[in-house]
Length: 377
Image 1 (cartoon, rainbow, N blue to C red):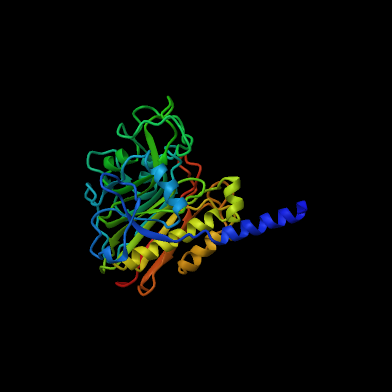
Image 2: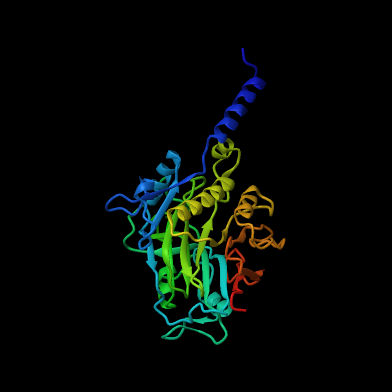
């Protein structure tokens, strides 16, 4: 007869063995006809390097991840892409530095208009939004942005409907898409989940990650990360630097925690698995072409310590990343970071890595860095 201690030991071995077989690998996918949810695999021989006009999808390979992400995707609205800014903004030219910001906007709590005005010098209050003299072109890597739409399917609740986040907002509050249009910026938004059920508080909303920029871009990409506590979709765009090099910008958001059972099964590798999935997805995108060796990744990694395994994996994959400055960005927790890889393009540098002290109503401080092109200096 097996003793309780032996049973516990056997259970532990099974859990460890199970965790070792859970893969973070990603693969190219495409939506079936009439859907925007990536449920179909794409063979390598079907991939064309010129296939960069529409939104490309990558998803986790594990069947469990695909099944759960598909259920969460079925209740959100479609992604939105505006690849060229409607406003007239300065080009990213030789000798011009580029501002890159990563910020979790807390589903409407963060004042995006005030942030754009005070931190990046963009005045959206005028009929023709403009950058003030001396302001630089910029890319904002945003998490927990919200979108309101009457086109979302009505949902009352369920396993794929997370709770509502963000403060109660007035009926005339502008969501992310309306804000981006008001400011004349180019943008990519891909929802990860519903923002709660259709109750009386904030009905018909989804939330996810986005990129907001003064630059034109191409090659928009969505990465459906391994499913842990919920669906997380990282987004990416590519813009041309002054000398023509392609620079990829990625906005991501990892889970703060998974379920207790899931944490036991995976050995509590929630964020590590998602980080490895993102790294693998970016590598898959580069293999599919066109090659982009300069990559900036920013986001809310929900890390509780500066030496978490997820951050260590990302620093290995992006070895030119700025050093963590020992500052928290969600209270004392070091949740938000920016990573950088330049490979052959050694004239690119990151400068001025900092935490923005004003939270602008969010529960996160933003991170800012300057991407500097030294080729003409």
